[in-house]
Amino acid sequence: MAVRVGAAACGSFVSLALLAACAGRAPAPPAAAEPPAAPAARAQGRAATPPFPQAAGEVIGRGERLLIYLPHDGDQLPAIAARFLGDADKHWTIAEANGVPRAEAGQPLIVPLQPLNPTGVRNGELQTVPILCYHRFGAGGAKMVVSPANFAAQLDWLARNDYQVLKLSQVAGFLAGREPLPRRSVVITIDDGYESVYRHAWPLLKKHGFTATLFVYTDFIGAADGLSWAQLQEMAASGVIDIQAHSKTHRNLTDRSAGESDERYRQAIETELRAPRELLEKRLAAAKVKVQQFAYPFGDANDVVLDAMSRQRYQLGVTVQPGGNAFFSQPTLLKRTMIFGDLDLDGFKSKLQISRSVSAP
Ligand SMILES: [Zn+2]
Image (cartoon, rainbow, N blue to C red):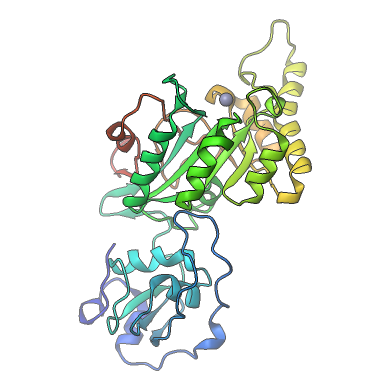
């Protein structure tokens, strides 16, 4: 919701803190409560890139949940976010709270110190996060292969339209009802671990300052057209690619082999979840890879798989059922939308479900 500070804001939704500020109560002591300056910008969406001048304006009111800030000439939202929220990448929370794209000198801004709207419900609309699913990149026009030109056009369009491209792990707080996400959030995931990710997708993601979550099945690593451990290590260390698990063998986890007993089946599923987590964390330890998300081969899971997910401490699991994910979505059965090679840009835009009516099923 857009909230403008000024006379109109006094008495509107913004809580006692703002009312106190409007009434001219002395602000709480500054500085001591301020977190340190932002750490280096993470690869998140179009990350705020320092250096920017330090925010030098004044705090004119402060409460527990928010403060009112009077920007000086040259103040930028990332600098304000760095000063008060400890993270320049949270500039979007100030932009969304005020309904403005940038700071203007002398125009007071609300800085939310706690999430104003972690669930993303606004005016009868429910925020949803689309998770996109890619496989291979290259020429040829096959359905599962996206050309580098098309992928570049899709990333260009996301950048031009102010989308924040998140790692899947960044959605966990939203699904727990704790952390708001930018309204235009999208997650890019890539399945299997083809070498073309390294050759085509990674450079394009880097160029845009975007990130992606790569789900690899570990038996494929080092295969003729699969990624090598060295390539995985390099991409993980770059911070651009988050490497997660897509089983060991890529069997359909819901199909039993002929004659497979209950016990053998459960053990096999356990191995499909445990082995890739252990191997990726061991071989990519130098890049501090932590495996907590799983993409089900063919998108399929059942109760046996979901039991193993919780035993193996996976936080999030993704299917291939298309659609956006609201804050109450089941974290281990998230929807995910396939992006095929024959999709044009209009088709791509139609896949980005960032909201739906609260009353929709
Ligand atoms: Zn796959």
